[in-house]
Image 1: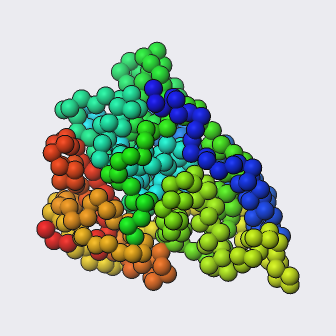
Image 2: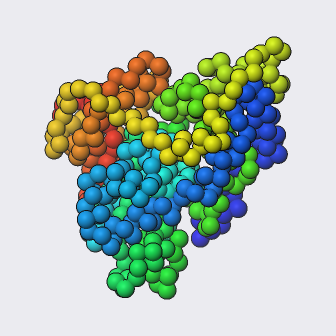
Length: 211
Length: 219
């Protein structure tokens, strides 16, 4: 499978040590000039490594699944409803939630750069930022989904959202059958980043790979 | 500009390179680049639009060769030199120019949580006429500006339908070049996949693109 074969090559063709040295030199210059505080850099990195990520979006999805009035607010004003759960900030100022169902599937891309809803999904994965996905998600979205292992039936309408402005899109995946007894927290643990971008569905753990 | 960054619809970019359990950063320097970008942005010397344009200006062969964080590093240096935060000589030597003043960082560690949570909307509370209404047929203009634009090539000249009016937003084509915000209505426009790609596309599918008033004309 091509996706697995490519796991050890994610587009880093330059010798890493060279980039390590260049970035170190730049940082020390900026620190010496008083332009940046190294402790602030550490705090920023800690935030994006440990505090902001797709678990945020998963909580939004699980809440919408269990609370119809929250779902209503999410569809009316996603920015405010997501803000209710404490998720705000850059790349999430203008949120729109698009809803997957039995006859509609949504897929999010940014063909021009790599716009992504940071407060709910964190930083985007390499594949989302890379040429293969950005080039093909609009012209061959069904082929892209096939590459992710998702076969979309012909009678399902596929809507691709190209994030060309400051509006950021989050997919509300379908709640899988057989989850009626799960708590909101258990539901959130099923929701993946890929399902919220629209390249996967949410699955029960025993029904197959869950990423 | 008709740059290689405008990739929608291109062939030949290879298979999607999926990585299971991908780390947030693959190398420590990538994390430093992201953090440097955000920390230097606190000086408010350039806009998001200008920052995106700085990446687009990377020559096409280099753009395709570079990873995302290499592109960001390149753009950060260009933006800092352009806005006189550093000189090219300082970047090359890694040392402040003799006699250059030492300043105080615009972003300190204790301000990071509020910076990260802070929203900086691109919408504007100004009156602007909406030239189009939801449900109206429109055509994306066939324009090829040499500067920054967010009108993707694959949609130019194509017929679509206004799906939603997002309200009034900063216009990137001028804002990226410090020519003013020119606030105007931003719409979500639905393009049938067959209008964009012909008969090979599914008749049910569609691409929704966010487009400013100035990108559209009456159909």
